[in-house]
Length: 511
Image (cartoon, rainbow, N blue to C red; front, side, top):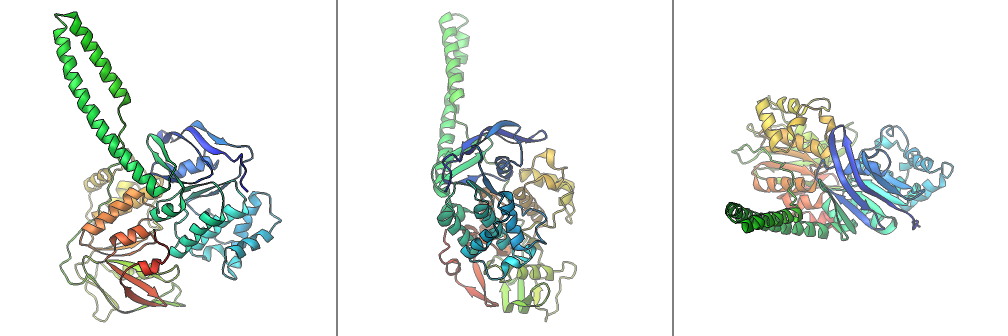
């Protein structure tokens, strides 16, 4: 039972990294709702959650917490040092945090309630899929730590459709707590949230409705503010001309001088009440598009994909052709081999040897230029500067890199700084920018929307819909998959089967 005194919020909060403002003027108080916190990449959502959880201190303002408040907090990154522990030992850490280290029976009750497969509790945590790691950490924070309020940062990262559905059930039916949830998964937020906060440069905009309705209301308000601002600007220009005439005439008649001053005061009142118009950051995701004049970008024949250790076959493909303009969604549950298949296809491409043996299982068109997006972003050189990372691509000059960074919305002052300072969403945008500069015509995308804000997701969707590049992608984002896929391939019992759409696979997980 949640305490009636459970209070968590922020009053006029501001946070800076050195001289760089992350957010300021932020105020809100959580109630008993499941509250979605939404904002553009880099606006400070994760930092704000860390302030609420006590991991960071504000530079200005204050965190409002009721006495003895217990916050269950799950960060976006898996905490270090867990990989070698057993699942049971990881869950025991949650008990330790709240002084229940001798109540191991609670772990067994929890595992039974959430129907964890037999034997998983004794497995090494690092051997679990990313989805199961995420679910275990959420279960520990939400149930074992007995929090008054639950704070979750991107809880659906690495979850497949089935696990997302499980999480939605937990949050809406079984965990009756006030919540603050940061996520870019539109379908998930539409099903889970009951209240929505939008974090922007000017503070927080609150709506007491679920995310989808709140976003529609916010966009309508932005449009109305823009209309009102245009009318205000038009009236200000008219009054400025009137005041100028009065000022000239006032040289001969004091009456007009007084009218000029009164008109200027009217202008000041309009300017003071003028609607502030939200202008999204100019940082569109743009895909490079090189022509591929061929009937097929990629052909596959008699391909077998196994686990990395070769111990188990994941998927067999008898014959498959991907044509220019095809946008292929790979469907299947976690562990089916989607990402492994994508990795195998990307690894088979050799730009130094474009001509393939006719009997090879994977054959690319000789004019193919392939790029691969890895959801973990593990290959990003975090110590390297943004501009150096881009110029490492063949044919990309510093001038090209600086122009691309400016167009993608990266401030000039940051282009010489290390990639490590970027948020995960900004790192994704940087990776897409490098791919664009490489002018590919075949994309392999593994969970491309995981870290992108909603505006970035919509940019990527429109780019894939409008271009003629070939694309093979893995995504658990229901909105994204439905919007961009032109073909659907599902892994069923180790076979790759072409299906008419994603609805049968999504089943009840519609959003």
